[in-house]
Length: 621
Ligand code: SER
Image (cartoon, rainbow, N blue to C red; front, side, top):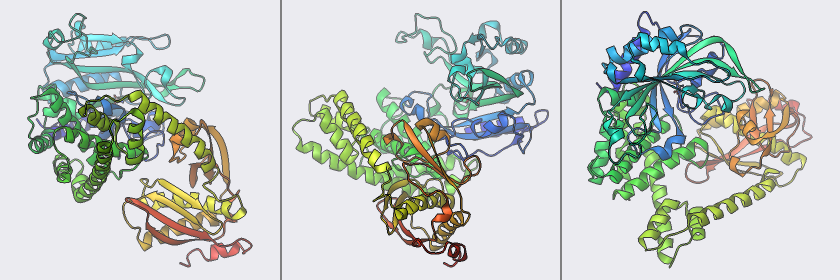
């Protein structure tokens, strides 16, 4: 059975009677209305408002396959089962059915539809705590389904409580969560007892790290909400949130513990294997490198297909990391300088998702161009750094940091080359230099966030507010990949640099200008609130130099701070009080400011001119 077949079977099983779920599309990898996180990392994420009680337009029973990305797992990739990008098969009851339907249905799907061996299935349930009782109901249901008692385990909240933030203590106020019941597939005790297994003298169980069990599904009984006082409140509705990793199900169905040997990865692994002339599975380190390249490039392709571009911030930074790590692991396997290699990894991913996510194939050329450009840039960076290293007699941690700062030369590569020159460099020295640099730029940024402004005159203050309006309008017209790269304001004009891969068309420029002027003519209020950094990001504020801020930041909102505001940004100010003070805004010029970066110059009509002209001239351009 292939991944595509498993996905199709699951979705039709949950759509069919008596389950009657409605199929909803996968949300994009980058969340649309959730500034608290960079990526959708579980199928429930876009459904949070509905799990909390808002009625979903499609009803109370939903199913889908959600494209998911877990950046926290980047370093874990390389073993047989960790991935950054994966698909999560999901079904939800929004205050409809509960445990006695969910557990038998999912069991039926696994054993009858997928034909998994019932004897190899193990399950776990929540063992209870001071607030929530042990999940005896699930235990009774599993037993009734024929799962033997010694295949049912109970664990505490660390293992059998699910919320986006983890255990009940870690949940944020307003967040939903609940006890869960996980399903595992057994790959045999010999893995635990193997002479090289560090666990061989301990008792094995489904959450043992020996590799014997693979988790293939999780039914969360989402019935609690965390309150601001730290307690848990029962939600008005009892929800089910099931998620099962498609790639892991594929591994179980095909009786392999290694997700990279299933058809989810076989085409990309074959190409990597040919290009590097390495055999998958032969050498442990080489196999690890091949898995990392396959995982990261698959993730990179899916991210670009969903509108992410490589950059130094937020999602773009994660994408850049994926590409760079893939290239460095390819270098380890002997492939370097051939960006055709990077390009050749797009087609297998596009073909894999031809029917499930056709937009990947449709954008194949664009994805290839973005990857080849980025690879070329990084390639040059590495070459420059290599030349510098050649000139050095010895490399210490501080010099390694300089190479990093000047050329973006990664620590791992510097370390590798120093090692090959017969010396070891000190990672602590590197990190110390890195921390000093961060502290310095934080101090520098206090000045910077006083404005990036030449002065605090009325004119520059107005232009500063206009910059926020421009930034928000760019994102509305061109997309949320737009991120600030720089800003410079004089009394005469504003200059704004931002990430965007191509020239902006005259029509787009007109629309951007129109939006700015519409916000001006609405005379929106500009309000400021001080908050801590985390709070500010949760509030939806854009903050593109976040690592440079101190702990308390100012957040400026243009428009209704409690409703659909026009713009919200972390910023030092100052700003005008109402947008009507600005006068008419004109874009004077749009040009390139480096690879993947565009620059806009604009000005406001001089003060003392009658603001009434603003509205009249709105569509004059
Ligand atoms: N949200 C749960 C998980 O990610 C089940 O879908 O495991």
